[in-house]
Length: 81
Image (cartoon, one colour):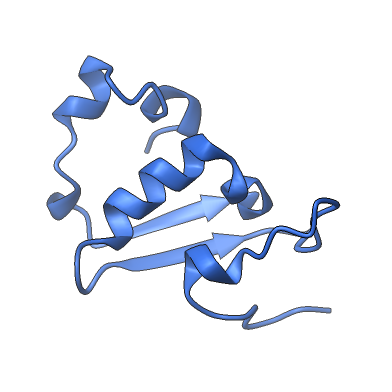
């Protein structure tokens, strides 16, 4: 388990120790933040490996800047109230 703030230091030793191929899935809580550059870098590194599952969860899927999260997650929301 790691935070985006920890892994987001892209050139950090912690980031370098992670081999994304070792993980089968990544869960992003508060995924409405995923439009930020730090999230994008991490997610795109992981999503680029075929067969990996990414699950984004948020209670506020509508962003005030109208950024489209489906570009990052590859689909429209599965469930929304």
